[in-house]
Image (tube, rainbow, N blue to C red; front, side):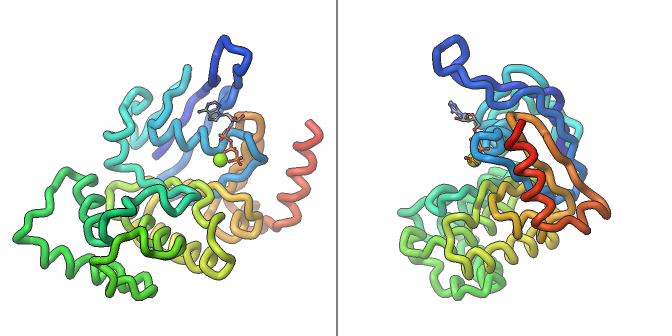
Length: 254
Ligand SMILES: Nc1ncnc2c1ncn2[C@@H]1O[C@H](COP(=O)(O)OP(=O)(O)OP(=O)(O)O)[C@@H](O)[C@H]1O
Ligand SMILES: [Mg+2]
């Protein structure tokens, strides 16, 4: 589904701030993989997501998605098949627009299909139905500005918006980090449910080791802009939080 080959990205090249962020990173992700991505601050996790989504381009190397070379494809085109949720609940939806308007925009983005006024009622019914599955009472708040919702409610809607696109790569960058533990847990379970239901291929960055071992079928650790650890299969199933912490301290010495 996703293949990154020998990607390099250096920020501020040729200046005193030159910063090699991604250094020969190669990674192949299969259709339907749910990969948790861990690594210390500055390891290159968000940069990898930016490369995949097209918000930045690699200096060299290639990125293929579903067999197509997307290395130079602009972000807005990739947005048709890549959904993204960030750490900040305010990013990913428009505060001044209502819940329904945000959902309409997400639908539009996925295929350029406009929301005709005549269809408004039908769409609202669909939105209500989708929102009711979140179990947060949001189906009653279709006309409220999204800015009035709590961070957790907003992340749940952003997730829903991201899952409306097909065919589906979901990039999650610490999307529960700004939520209280109970809400984080709820949004995490919802994430897992949406990924399974829509058979998404997903990458989730997290600093929460419990989440990193509890969710997904594969775990990738980045270190200094490269893949330092890639665990899947039965090894992944048997992986414990303490194993990861041990790996972290081992890498910290390098
Ligand atoms: N737009 C940018 N301009 C300059 N440097 C950048 C930019 N984006 C990232 N970097 C640098 O690239 C390196 C990797 O950053 P990145 O944000 O990918 O780390 P990360 O693994 O997501 O870390 P964290 O866990 O703190 O979010 C860092 O040294 C960072 O300062
Ligand atoms: Mg980051």
